Image (cartoon, rainbow, N blue to C red):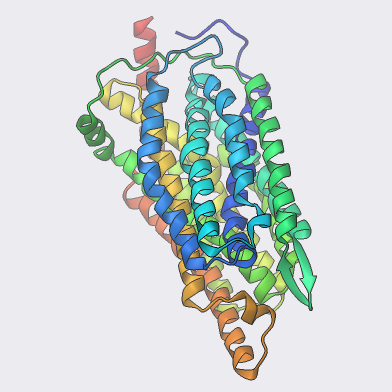
Length: 471
């Protein structure tokens, strides 16, 4: 039964936007700059950092599902079922993120730096980020039961992520990079300062999320006895969930592959931190001006699945053209980057609403509402996407022979020639990773994910009928 509270409105949408703004102050910083920080500032091999990011996600297989069960089984309070978790965890997630970027430890022994990286990264990503993000994502279904309202929440969540990406992507390169002997180099002390500022801002955003949102749909605690086997069977036989998980992993492979490689292709291939900053600026503006206003309208007309598949194919095509042309001007590369970003931006804008579609579909089939369990599986999938992209970027950089010393200070003809080969390969990978990822997303949505426009509308009507009958 819905609580007698103020109706859903702009206050909820802005509040929910601030929640993802807070999430991404630490998430985007990690996906865009952590690998660069540890390779160039801390002196740790790219493959080592990438493998950590990948290995940590296997820990998430346990922490995400565990947190999903904790959330599902927690009892609603006066503040709701999900909001209290955000209040408890927002401080720890911000502090643990800041601890990752401690450049003052760069002179410590190699084993110490690797250990510090492992402990702080797992503390942030596998424990505290999980504990705040799963309740936040699950909260959308408690803010409103209306499918249209949830689609708007998805759009505003994307706006929050885009604003965070704008703030981080535009500002960080301009502040964090310095010029040394004509080369663009990442400053460790500046990165530490930036991480501290972003951690404080993330807490402010979480507080605004708590103050502005209201849980008006009561989600009772799941009191059924937990059977791990039955839960896994239910989740892994859910074609809609498996489809959106596969698409999410591939989306993150494309998106974070773009962001991860941009930390190398712009300062190394094009020697321009300004171009990196402007690519983030123009991409964020494109999401706000093109994707956010049009996504809900186009999805309502054609369907979320249908819209996402077409636009992801468009993004893949853009990067393939860029690969063939190999623009020497950094601003032409920025243009390709932004166009492809619009392609994936439509899917990234509606994907949160697609998760609620998956939850609705499972409830229609099973008669049980499992927001936390399903969202935790999806959250784990996103982390797998993050891990695979980071692991892939780190492995590829190691495979192409990335070495900051050679790129920044080549001392002989052989190293100069090797530098040119490395730069060419970095450029090629910056195009191939997102192109392959986006093409694969489209194929999964077309051939695996079953929730097209007609089925989503049918599920909404069925659940509405059931709720009316239960009153």
